[in-house]
Image (tube, rainbow, N blue to C red; front, side, top):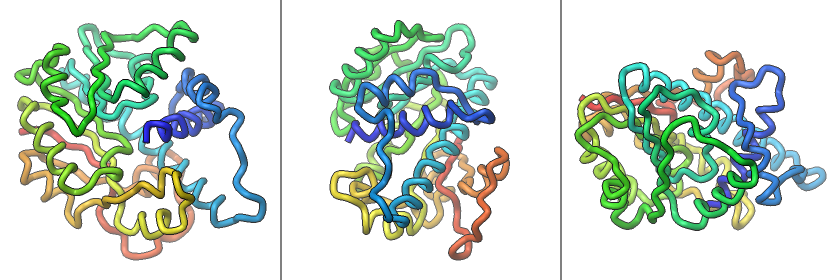
Length: 271
């Protein structure tokens, strides 16, 4: 599944080239090139539906990246100095964002993507702007133990990011992940989640090519994500892609297909 994170890097590289980019990710193109996704391959000729799906997914990646960038900046402004990226993939926030002195950023993922990433970072001579600590562990295993061994302090507030992750996990695994995050979160911790909006698997997963990212999507968001997170001790806010896109100057001009439900971009604070 980690290869999909190279596809995300490709999207971020294309956004970086825009004059009015919502963020700049100088390493994204190197990740995409090393993974064989640069230059990008066009969709099949005449497959308009595939083209539209691809554009929609790419657009959502751009918006969620900006949303979580802002969340992390707000967390740092509130005094948080620990950041944990779960399923970090090709995330380069340690290298492209400005971090307050004393920030420690943990990247949790399996060894294969971390090794691939390390080779590209070495090639690019990339230098992190904070203390960056990689934690090679499968999220199905005792990742809290591995995180603690790497130096994470659960008595201090943490900013947690699970970006493009939960949609790939079965519901029981999502519940376990959230329970583990909550146990490791002191008061004042922040969390940013991306959830699969209701109907997204029906719209994108049903006709997806085998092996593609959308073909592996299995879990959508709960009907009331705010109440769901409240049950785990988090005060959450739900934001739709449409709301955030408009706020970032990238409005979605097509009308919603149905009455808009709670959105799949979640910000939360541990009380």
